[in-house]
Length: 241
Ligand code: SF4
Image (tube, rainbow, N blue to C red; front, side):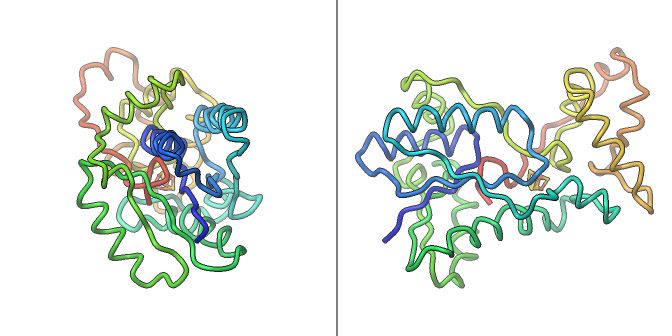
């Protein structure tokens, strides 16, 4: 059976690939789905890790996309935005393109997903959803081997590689407010794109519930530092849909 890694460019799936290779279980294919709104540092890391894999096992990461328009331009054209509640962006721009890409290969596939030892709920959810998939069996090597997030970081360090940055889209509704603030400071072109998308919404909705990017845009550094913003992890980062 063909073995395919669902690679998200983050800590868990990077550690999972290293773990699989080091135990002699080299996958047949490693697939990263580029939504067209990925953070540039994630795309850089995918290239970096792909170059490492080419040298180590002669395999490069396959990058696939739903289409050339991409999630950002699609949202702009339709005057819509990703929203937390329905996660249509994950389904349409990550899961379906992944399934479509691997379905061009005959037969059943084992799909490796990088949920770790502390993600019982996500493993259960993924197993439930994958019941209906005729041509895929999902497996969770990190979870099965009781490998935690900290262990993942250690696996990458021991391999002598850089730790991947947090993966995701720059228009993700799961982005903590402080990260939008950091985006404004460090990646103003991406912040401007997110702001443009938000401002064109016909009903004045915001990408992140309760946080208007135009207010962040207007805020000074001190105003922002006084605010409390609990981090909410993105549900689909790191290829873990
Ligand atoms: S990272 Fe966020 S915006 Fe991108 S596909 Fe996932 S949920 Fe949607």
